[in-house]
Length: 111
Image (cartoon, rainbow, N blue to C red; front, side, top):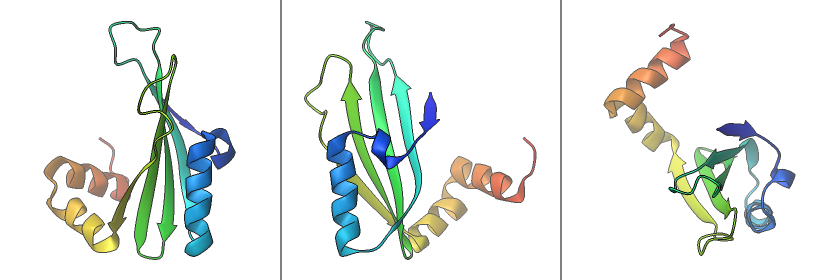
């Protein structure tokens, strides 16, 4: 399940990393999301994945961190993926299903 939230709703380690990056390069946060999943046999274990999307000019940085009920060795780790406008264009034009869905979404064509 996806939830939209603010940066203040994210784990502190993720907030700190995003704020630190914005000190050196001004960026605009355009989406903060939390996705909950139950990937284990024990459905009481909930993994919450937080993503913060920040635009820096023609690049988009996606900061990601997880929190797990009961803790996990990957909790409190922040990963960053960066794509630029040219890479987004390649994905939109050449990734079969992603490109088709993206064009449909942008053209507001009903599915």
